[in-house]
Image (tube, helix red, strand yellow):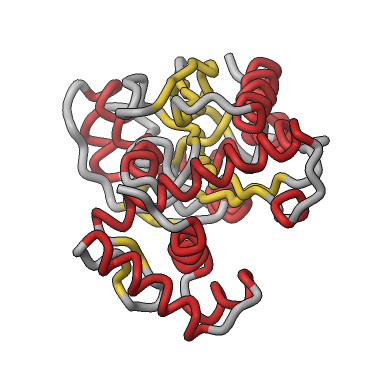
Length: 295
């Protein structure tokens, strides 16, 4: 089946931008033209490709074609660069959608983007490291920092190292809830702080210490800086990246919860198996940045 490139570009723009109007502005056409291209593509494949909501999202076949559109865009960009063509593709930036967990995004990952080549823009999607692989599977992103060591179909995987997390709390929290030690009963009672409902680090660490699952009350604080501030304020205990915990531990505003308070989370870089200069360059940048920061 042969696909019209303008129709694929329209599909990609709608899903990237979230609305037909925003996609039209990006493509420098009218919303009606975008709608016609999407309808033409849907008629060709005999499937609905876009859920018309706010934001627009792909159906399962829409995700397949969106992935194809993104791969073709990267290939066109690299071919144009090699040929030295000054046509319209040369002036259109190539977008690389990348899923990164919040702790990597707030620490080591930005170093990978220093000196990114002209003509390449990144669309970073913040997602938990245990869920970023899902975005690769549905074609939402080109690459991801993930905790999944098993390559998603059609992708390659490279180990990056491990991010160390420390179990910490304000001194008064440790004194109040863990005066008699860090055992299962104390971990069931003491409030914990998690980044969001997908953040399972606290429960994983607690289960390792207790030897069983624990069920503490949990605060959810989806901000890296606010997460540490909430710990310092004494709302509970939580797992903090080693680098982020260093300052508060040195200042005494946080203390380690247990004699061996760490949990190492291996991270991996998964990306399309498609080999292009642009994607290879980003991969090498990410691997170097991770090697300088992770264990």
